[in-house]
Image 1 (cartoon, rainbow, N blue to C red):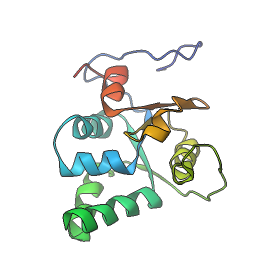
Image 2: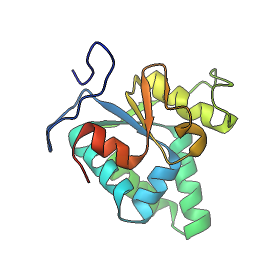
Image 3: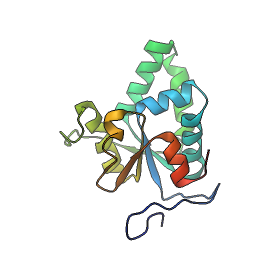
Length: 154
């Protein structure tokens, strides 16, 4: 198990497969990972190869919308790239029942998705989410922190 009974996080050895760890990446991390190389892409790639990624339709739709509007990506291209990372993803439906959890109400959906998926991590660059630190047993971390906490130093 990746957590001790005191809920401290344990660093796992590099390239250790940890299939029971579920991570949810918010739309901003997805966009950075797909559009640019760097730490967000590495975090997503590691989660895809060694763990399980959770996602909901709302995050997927937002990523595709932003890539189309801001970067002129065709939906077919963004869908194909996302689906490459989502082959073994845990896809959940978000009923929208969780409210007033985050100071930005738009981020409640991200937290609800993670709760429904039983995720251990939300990987985000969003200051409103990161300021929470955690929700229930879900740690909210940057892509860099995700890599450091779960797999390997950068």
